Structure formats: structure tokens, C-alpha cells
Length: 201
Image 1 (spheres, helix red, strand yellow):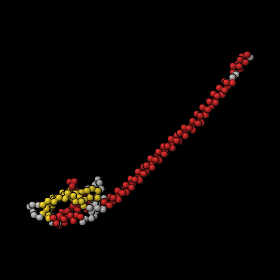
Image 2 (cartoon, one colour; image 1 turned 120 degrees about the horizontal axis):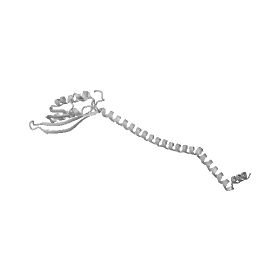
Image 3 (spheres, helix red, strand yellow; image 1 turned 135 degrees about the horizontal axis):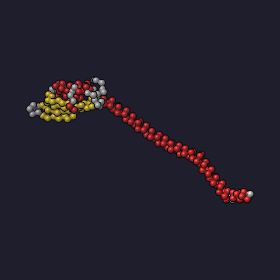
Image 4 (cartoon, one colour; image 1 turned 90 degrees about the vertical axis):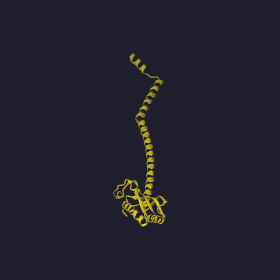
């Protein structure tokens, strides 16, 4: 009996001890509630916030890419329009071959002697028809040395300028021929643009 009373006396808590025990139980309960209820919700909210920021950044990047694509499409359309306009001034592969074949004929018709005639890039005239161009549009040139009267030089230039395609005359240099009074020697380079995608004229 005395032992029971002694145990009861020992188990009896003071008011301070009861408060401390209640506080400890309350703290354990709060920590458990935080761990089981609040913590997963907070983690979910944090993840949602990060996902929202990532999506916002992705949307901004997507808008930038779309703006760049729209700008590039506009540039491409402009370039296509310019190419189409320039293509009207260019020769087809077959037209370029015919043009270079006709050069000597036109010189003869203007009363000029062709002393030399060479084609740029060491390409033979036959290569114009068969060449597989790495670029659809390329410039080709012919360099000539001509002897003849001034009027003949002017007549040849007028023939070249009357063509519907664009012809560039560069390196035009005339000197007198002491051996033939009234005659001139002329070094001339004639350049044309060849569009390998253009239909034959």
C-alpha cells in the first residue's frame, strides 16, 4: 500500500510540469501537422511558382522567336522580289551561250577586227549549257581586243545596249593605232548575269 502511495505521489505532476508536458505535446502535434499537411502544400506552391516563372520565360522566348521568324520571312519575300526583278535582266544558260557566240558576229557587222576574245574563269563556251551551277545566278565575262574605226566601236556599244538583258561594259580602253591612221585599238570587258534557273529565251 505504501508503495502504491509512493508511486502515486511520484507520478503526481506539479502545475508547471503539467504545463510543460502540454506544451511539449502541443509542439509535437504542430510539428507533425506541419510535416504531414503544410509542408507538402508549401512545396507544391513553390513548385507551381517556379513552373509559372519557367512558362513565362518560355512564352517570352517563343514570342522573340516568332518575331525573328516574321522578320526573316519579310526579308526573304523582299529578296525573292529583288531576285525576280533581277532575273528579268539576266540571261538563261542557253541565252548566255548564244550571246557569246554572237559577239564576234556583231563585231564584224560593226566593221571591227577581233584580235582576241577570251572568257572569264577559264570556262569554255560549251560549258554554259552543261554546267551544274552551285549558285543559280552567276556573272560571266568576255574580254576582247578590237581594232577598228571609232564609229564601229560606237555601233558595237549600241548593239550591246539594245539587248533586253543587262550588259555591263567594263575596262573600256581605247588607243590609236599608228600603223592604221583613223583606226583605234580597244580593250573591252563585257559582263552578263546568267540565271541557271531561267527558261531558255
